[in-house]
Amino acid sequence: MDSINYFFQVLSSVLWGWPMIILLLGTHIFLTIRLRVPQRKLLTGIRLSVKKDKDASGDVSQFGALATALAATIGTGNIVGVATAVALGGPGAVLWCWLTGLFGMATKYAEGLLAVKYRVRGEDGRTYGGPMYALERGLGMKWLALLFAIFTALASFGIGCMVQANSIALLANETFGISTSLVGLFICILTAFVILGGVKSIARVCTVLVPFMALLYVAGCIAILLMNGAYVWPAVRLIVRSAFEPAAAGGGFVGATVMMAARYGIARGLFSNESGMGSAPIVAAAAQTRNPVRQALVSSTGTFWDTVVICALTGLVLVSSILAYPDISYADGAALTKVAFSKIPYVGAPLLTFGILTFAFSTILGWSYYGESAVNYIESQRSSRFYRILYIVALFFGSIINLDIIWNIADTMNALMAIPNLVALLLLSKVAAQETRKYLWADRLDDVMED
Image 1 (cartoon, rainbow, N blue to C red):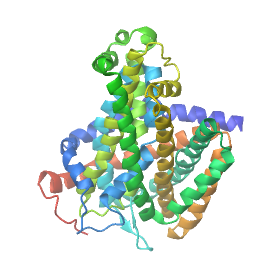
Image 2: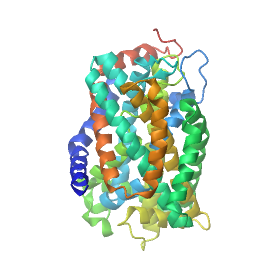
Image 3: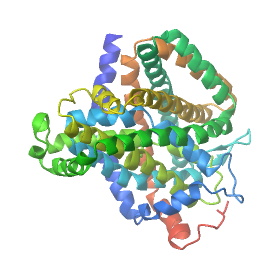
Image 4: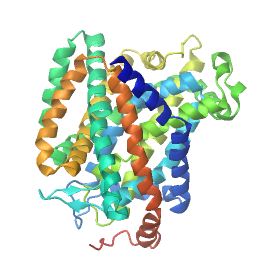
C-alpha cells in the first residue's frame, strides 16, 4: 500500500504541476478571447439562473442545475484551501486565485454550452450530457469519452465521497466527541434519502441548502471584515502588491515569491471552481433550457459565486485578520482559518464548523450525480441503483479509515478528467463560438434550439 500511495502521490504532483496549470489558465484566456468575453453578460446569467424557462426541455430547472453544480464545487477548499494558498504563497495568492476565477468563467460558459448542445435523451427518459457526449458526438472520440467517464466515476468516490465523509466525521469527532462510526452511519442515511431519488431529488435539496449555507458563510465573512474595518483597505493593497512584488508582503511572508503566489493562487482557484475539469457540465446538460447559450450563461455564474466572490472574501478575511492580529500564525492554513473566525464573539467557531459540515455534505450530493452519470455512460442506465448503493457504502468507509491514499488517487483522477475535457473544449471552440454568435451576440436568447 505504501508503494501504491507513493506512486499516486508522485503522479498527482506531476499532473498538477506547472504544465497543467498553464494549460488550464491558457484555456481560460483563449476561450475568453475566442468567445468575445462572455463574462460581460454576468448579470444576464444571474437573471436567467432564477428564471424558469417554461418552453424548455430538461430534467431540472436552470437554478437547480446551477445549485447542484455549486454544491459540488463549494467545499472545504473555499475555506481551508484559500488559507493554505495564503500560508504557502503569501497574500498575493488571493489575487491570482481571483483572476483565475474571472477568466475561468469563460471556460465554464463553454462547458455548459457544449453539454446542452450534445446532450441526449436516455432510455429512462432522463437527459444526459457532459464532456463524454461532446467527445463522442462532437468529435467522434468514443475512446476518449470512455476514459473521461472512467476517471469521473473513480474521482466521485474520492474527492466527492470518501474525502468529504472523512472531513465531516473527523470534525464532528473533534468538536462534539461523536464516534466517527456513528457520524458515518448518519451521513449514509442522510445521503440515501437524497440521492436515491435521482437528480430531481438532489437538485431540490441543493436549491435550498446551497443558497442558505453560502449566505450564512458570506455573512460571517462580512462580520469579520467589519471588525477588521481599519485593515481591509491595507489588506487589499497588500494582496495586489505582493502578487507582483515579493518583498511587499514583508514579515513572515518574506520567503514567498511571485512564482509561489501565482502557483498556489492559480492552483487553488482552478481546483476550487473546477472550471476546465469537466464535472459541472454533466449536471448543466440536465437543465431545462431552450438553447445552449442560456444555460452556458447560467453555468458561468457558478465560477463567479465560487471563486470571484466566496474565495475572494475568504482571502480578504484572512489577510485583514493577519494585519489586525499580528500574533496569528499563518503557517497552518486550517489553524489560520479557525483563528480568524474565532474573532467573532460566541458564534464564530460554530459558524465555521457549520460551514465546513454543510459544504462537505453538499459536495457529496453533487458528486454523486456526476459519478452516476459517468457510470451510466460506461454501462447503461440500469447501473444507477447499483452505483448509488456503492456510493453510500463508500461514505461509511470514508468516515472511519485513513485517507492518505484516497486523497492522492482522487487528485490524480481529477487531473486526468481535465485532459479529455480540455481536448473537447479546444477542438470544439469553433462550435462554441458559432453558437454564441447565433444566440448571444445576435440577441436571440429566447430562440428555441433546433434538434
